[in-house]
Amino acid sequence: MARMVQNENKAAGAFFFATLMLWLLSLSFEIVFNKRNELLCVIAGCCFFQTANWVIRFRFSKDPLFVNTSVSLLHSSIISSSVVFILVNQWLKKGSNGIYLGGLGRGHIQLYASHAVTLHMINGICCITGYTMLHSIFLHVRKVRRMAGLRDANSTIVRAEWVLNWVAFIFARFVSHVLITVRLLRDRHKFGKGIELPLALFGMVGMNLLNVFLGIDLFHAFKREISSQPNSHHHRE
Image (tube, rainbow, N blue to C red):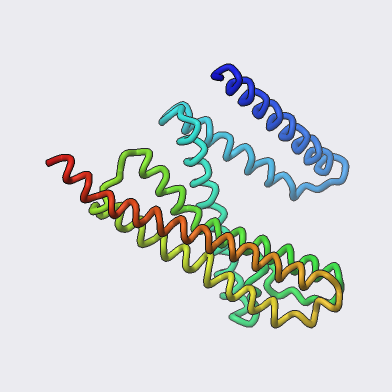
């Protein structure tokens, strides 16, 4: 059984490495032959997070779960901070009328053609991803905190983490989705009679259902962590 698991892990590692090589090859082709120099920032980001992976692995812990969670925490923090920075920058430059909740850096976009509708949807997906990463920060913080042994529900750190976790969940996974859905309905006349609007609406419904399930799981985890505290005190006594 152990040998079978080891073989599966090796196969998964080989598949991931092959996929990474194909991605790097296609990216290099675009940069070298099509002069897409703006894609160099993707290479820089990849090198940055891989370096962070090595530093955490050799300086703190070799546990793969701890390393992956820590790098994911760093990734979520940087991406969500970038999203907030872009939106605040657009707000200061163009005011509330110049910001589109579904567009990162393209808040002023006007939907004149069908390809712009596609861009409208892509921007919405990017924005939702950025918002959800804001909450992912605290999901990763909770995992790292529990792996570090900080499980006392009465401690200030745990209470503060749960407060921030719920605030981020409400803002990033509920309020922002409602606002984006409202904006999508307001712009429905720009989609024409194609499949794009139903597809976008069903996509929002699907993501909102996932958020509902996540909220239920988060509530159960919160309730379980709080209710287990008296039992731990009882065992100590």
